[in-house]
Amino acid sequence: AQTVTQSQPEMSVQEAETVTLSCTYDTSESDYYLFWYKQPPSRQMILVIRQEAYKQQNATENRFSVNFQKAAKSFSLKISDSQLGDAAMYFCAYSMLMNYGGSQGNLIFGKGTKLSVKP
Amino acid sequence: EAQVTQNPRYLITVTGKKLTVTCSQNMNHEYMSWYRQDPGLGLRQIYYSMNVEVTDKGDVPEGYKVSRKEKRNFPLILESPSPNQTSLYFCASSSPGQAYSPLHFGNGTRLTVT
Image 1 (spheres, rainbow over the protein chains, first blue to last red):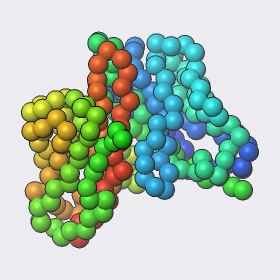
Image 2: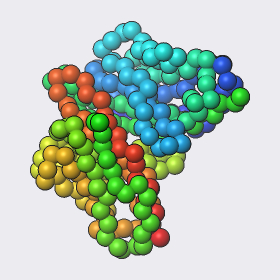
Image 3: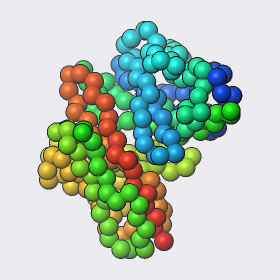
């Protein structure tokens, strides 16, 4: 069975600094998706970034980037120039890649990392 | 506006009193799913549905029921709620296919069972 592990329950960063959130996963599949979701106090689940395992290039979305190490089964999220609005719970998640090319939809989540941003 | 709508947003009930949390999506998505979120445990899948009349258990299905009689609706039923079902619940939908389809989440339902 696939598992996702986030080993940092809480992290803190100074505004404008850079922070990296860790995620490791376990799977026997060779093709899959990995995600980072942000959950602010409003409880919304917001997709931050997505990585296809078959792509070697690390995904980036503005100030958010990932370090995807497939062999090590590691998927960390780097937030650059941290802003007060980045304070939230962050979840790492895994999804199988189906043989028809898309995602089945079922996500396996880590336990989350609560990020605080200090002004 | 494309959205997943859950109701209610907050619900307080007593042990044993049957309740239903509704979920509706207006994107014609085939796939729908329910998750519960608990502190220190992340989100765990309760049930999912790949299409009308097709449902399957997730990781924590005990104490829950679902039905998928229409494509747009996927209600979560607690026949006899217990305090350990106090949680934050999310409904989600997507359209699995040959291209990646993002999972759309509802805004969550905070359930308290006393």
